Image 1: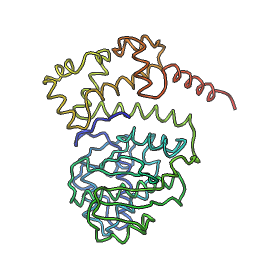
Image 2: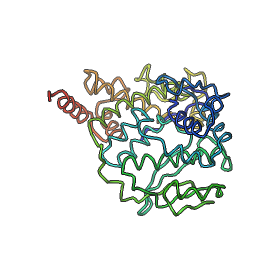
Image 3: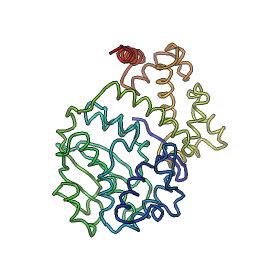
Image 4: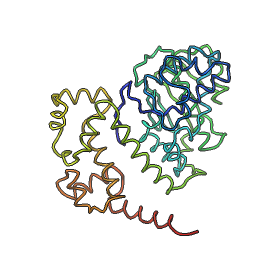
Length: 357
């Protein structure tokens, strides 16, 4: 799974779709959009603009205003429950077209950055339970009311998306929260459809019956899923190219991908810093030089295999591999398929979609 560069607080690279849901939920309670957006730098017109982008700092400012202004203590849970796959653009369609929930989870985590996350998200299976774990990646603080608001919004969102995938009957087996029970704790059970709510735990978790992981999905479409994931790869590359120091490293590697074989030193020199400093600052952004290099190589390889008339030998050389065998080994590690298998699958999909009805 690729590690995506964590954007800086002021990188305006995120879609405002979910902000629109929050603003609409407050509007239904009589809170004007102008009040929610005041001081954030986000214009009300941006909420319906497909080209608009906002920063993490702006997202946090609007969430903090919503927390301050809402007369409903459970607003975050209710607003999260209104989120649908269509709020995530192509990322949402890639999830919806997946063959099983297990595959949808793989896609969700691979392209997580496209969801404009304010909270970390990890997945695991613990016995007969599927477990989502939430993490304070922005350092808001364990006792922060804003972190609790963001966490509850994500809880509602996770449940809404699970029900869209699997049907309204799906319910959590239990919810575990790291903080103390809030004043509206009694509403958790009603809004989440779960009677087992635990507070003061060692982690924030949402747990489901693991049996649903391999359940066939009603909207599964392998061709649509593959196409959407190709677009997600492109969007993720664009996002990384705009985000923080890691984005600058990605941009330099994409300019001359053959230098991927030369180690971190040339890139550090281009950025006028010592390699140790570059490694340390990349770790602070949640990534490493090796992960960024592999992501660049993987994405360029996918682009060239799908769209350019380049041989495997030429692609290997262009990406700085010593020979085609090493490239093929790396590509299979990244994608689970060989370069030839990927090209063959794309040709077959193209043939199927081009046939007249």
